[in-house]
Image (cartoon, rainbow, N blue to C red; front, side, top):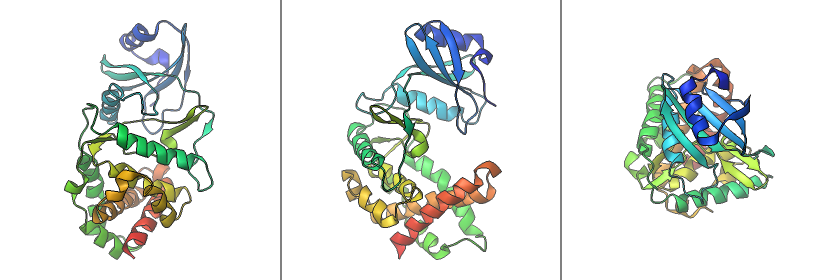
Length: 295
């Protein structure tokens, strides 16, 4: 469920106000796939943004991870600054500077946002290597979760699963050790986690952040470009503009593409009804990339 500001425990509201001062009024905002609080707060010194989630929620671990990342992100990272975060009365909460969105981010081939996002990926690799101190799991943990769903699908493939041979060949080449590194990764870069502002794009929601090789950030972004309308060849051409991606192990990239896509194939067939169609589209983009790399 989603919450209004007034419904938060008094201890949580008090902790937030100890940072920003008394609240003049609050406006609830969409909270995305996770239930919880997302609210714009008007204070005497201006607007701030607050998000909070009960620790009983399955997504609370992602909020905890985002809070730890927000505490150490360097200024050079184009992301809203976290003013403070805490764990109070059974709730995880974060308070951010307020950012005004001017429009939706656009990753389609003709959009000027594409070049800016490619530059953001480059900046992330350079600025967040080594990890500035965020306590996050290795990227292998994230990928192992995807791999379990992918392997379940490959073990008993539906009759209509396309490119089965390509998937199996690509999956066989995935070596989790090849993903290891000392870069802090966002690991979920897509249009929904980008905010277009008057000062450029800003990257949101670090709940899936992890540590690994710098090239992994770019590899996880390629299927998002394909989903936005780029051909696999065009997406790869953009990817190689990021220096870290040029040294990515070929088999590891292809294997990562396979489990990324197969995970979405799995969710498109077995996940909540409300997200099945979007995951099927994402799976199609990932499958096109796998086919391109294994042809």
